[in-house]
Image: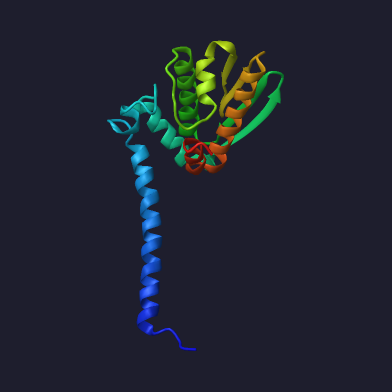
Length: 180
C-alpha cells in the first residue's frame, strides 16, 4: 500500500476548497439575484406577478432577519389565527407593512405568484374567504377563514409555509419556489 504524496494531498485540498468556494459563491449569487429582481429579472418577466420592487425589498429584509421574528399558528374553524411578532421596532413596522401590502394585492387581484404553493389558490379565490388584520404593538395578528373546505385548507397550508419562512428563512422560500 502506498501513501498519498504531498503534491496529491495539496491538490485534493485545493479541489475541496474550490468546491466549497463554488458552493458559497453560488449561494451568494442566488441571493443577490433574488435581491435584484426589481428591474427586469424574474419580476420584470412576470414571475412575481403583482409584487412591486418595494414588496421584494421587504421580503428580502424579512428573510434576512427571520430569526428576530416569533410566530404562532392556531387552527380555528375554517382557517387559522396567526400571531407574528418581533422586539425590533423597525422589523415590526416592516412586518405590518408587508401583511397590509399582501392584503392590498389580494383585494386588487394583483397576484403575487412566487414563494408559495398556496398563494395561487388564495389569490384566485380572494373573495371566498374572510381576512382580519390586527396591528399590535409587537407585530400582527391575522385571522383568515372560509366556509369552503378547499379554501380553508389553502389558508392553513399558507400559514404553515409562512411559519417555515420565519423558522428557516431563505431556504424555505427556495423550497416553495421549487415546489417542494
